[in-house]
Amino acid sequence: MTMHTPAPRITIVGASLAGLRTAEAVAGVLPGARITLIGDEGAAPYNRPPLSKDALESLARGRETAAAVLERLALRSKLGDRAELRLGQAAVALEGTTVRLADGTAIPGDRVIAATGLRPRRLALTGAEGRRHVLRSFADLRALAADLRPGARLVVIGGGFIGCEIAATARKLGLSVRLVEPAPQPMLRALGPRVAAAMAALHRVQGVDLYLGRSVAGFGAAQVVLDDGQALEADVIVEALGSHPNVEWLAGSGADLTDGVLVDDHLCAPGAPGLMAEGDVARFANPLFDATPRRTEHWCIPGQTARRVAEVLAAEAAGSPPPERFAPLPSFWSDQHGLRLQAFGAPTLADATRVVEGDLGLTGTAPVIVEYLREGRPVGVLGLGANPAALARHRAHLETSLARSLAEADPATPAV
Amino acid sequence: MNVTVDMSICLLHGQCVIAAPEVFSFDDAGGLVWLTQVDEGLRGALEAASDACPEQAITFG
Picture 1 (tube, helix red, strand yellow):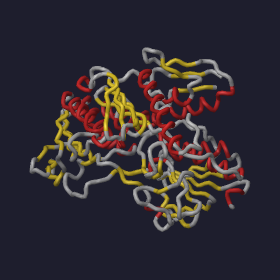
Picture 2 (cartoon, each protein chain N blue to C red):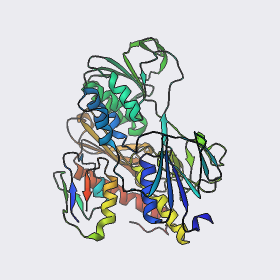
Picture 3 (cartoon, each protein chain N blue to C red):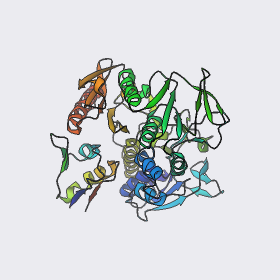
Picture 4 (cartoon, chains in turn green, orange):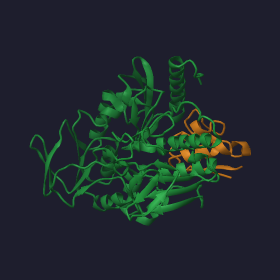
């Protein structure tokens, strides 16, 4: 097989965190590999989480230049000259294991690793042109920051993490902020009803007007019109409605492209020989929780899947089976109104929560730690302004508990 | 190897404590503590910790 050749050609499509970390990891385990890293953005890989937080604040205040912000966000790389970088050209098709770029160039390879990530979903509505923003890329950041002026009226559409972070940052910048969310609470799916309600209360106290259970019916020239007919005056509008996986270039590859790229335990795409996927475009089952493949949009996933890609390729090169089981413990964080949310596991899978430290009624003023349970077993833990040492103890407990469940489900797997 | 954490940008995510518990830990007050001198044998753990840090606050060498 081709990957047993001494100098395999590895093409990584997507030059953000996942692509970069994979290139580094593959270079580490396959010193002879010829690695090509393709990215549609012109900029070298950079860190995205600050885009809705301190980078947005700093740029909007004019505290730093755009160039200085981008330099600060640039991901440090161990790659050196171990990969050929092709930036500023999107991949548009996969033909076997050859990647076709927008300018027609063909990049032949033995393995293709999809790390193309996500793009923001947009509302299929016209109106309010020139006022509507999304936030995913550095270019998005520059456009939005320029419009976040003190006193301006901002309407954020979508109460997920990004929407809530932008709302909080905009309050800090002195804007009047309204947030529209179809669900009964912001961040409901991610945090569950009790924690989401506590976060809604914090947003209200901090001056964010919440329009919950409401969706957008249309736009006026300077208005967001809700489904109940209310019209919200808006100088700036942000659509923070979640993301869409960038998989169009894989059409016809044979891979299952229903919500990302379906991959197995080895991050290989069934039906598309030679194709792997990683990062938040990859949909895989995590045996820590169950057998349902899911995409996970957390910052930790690129690093975790990059290591898995490398260990799978290294094992194949050595002619040995890859280590059994890919079961990464997810983690995520958010910063809103000076409050740090930090979670481990999969709170979104829980059917119940238990406050193990503090009081949700004091969210934002005193530390809180919440355990998330599914059918009575812990699947996640979340800290709200929690002491990192206390949260680390709960995380360790969660990890032990999940490993025990895994071992019970499959006695061949030793408990950690 | 010397291990440095830039505490002016560290936001106490604790990813290093998970990736390299031999090197990094929290004290009871929730402050980050780490070994400033470690053996070459811990390079892999340090690389993992450095990569896992969302603030890129960890350097070593």
